[in-house]
Length: 305
Image 1 (cartoon, helix red, strand yellow):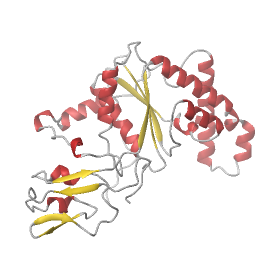
Image 2 (tube, one colour; image 1 turned 30 degrees about the vertical axis):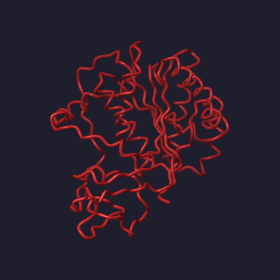
Image 3 (cartoon, rainbow, N blue to C red; image 1 turned 180 degrees about the vertical axis):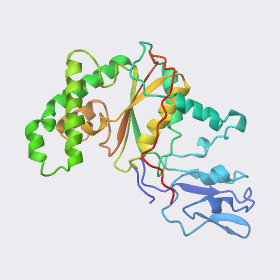
Image 4 (tube, rainbow, N blue to C red; image 1 turned 45 degrees about the horizontal axis):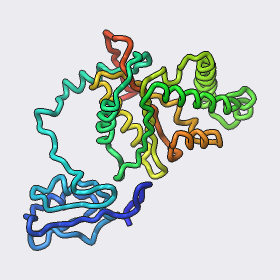
């Protein structure tokens, strides 16, 4: 047994062709699980494995003779592909230009995003680091404006049912248990957010997902590294920019889908498979506005030690 995920609990199986192996030792050097050793000039399986093969595929990717095959944990040898050549890879200046051009977009044209374009976004997002493979990132795709609007309407109804959560009496009750920052967060952000989301939707105005033609909800399973859905969403966001699309990350939806019977009903309706420690909704569409300048941002601190 290897490290379990929601998709598998078994270790992958490593096969080494001794006729192809030239004993270069690259597989030994690259495997962090100590799956290989060199004996009599050939790579063979080691007895010192820590967790069992997790199917990271580093050994297959680095073997110059194609002597290694890994099967299992949602991986097959057929999943390998040649890396793009240097001419097709972007350089730093081009990448920085793309990142500087990106900004959060909340005004979208009425133009639909084709399924072919969505598929390109998903292909890029699936290259994101995934923690322990196979990826435990799950994705809900709302690929039409009407679907996004219904999702948003149902979400606002869920908020309405949980409005007590930001009521004055509840804030008073929780004051001894919340620190100052938490109380400020609820009073100055969460409560106004409830008012805007619910009130605007009742008037037919979408201030949650901004009438976007596409929404992608990235979330994880209980086995998932909390960062993985966020990283995958970031990859999709950058890919959207490269395709001429605008995007906006929405962090306020995910927390309210985690707890209570109403949240469970919502998850069941939209086939959201798990509660998740971290998750993110990314809305995508063709920008209505054209921005002429970027904004220089900064970290809170940069310390060298």
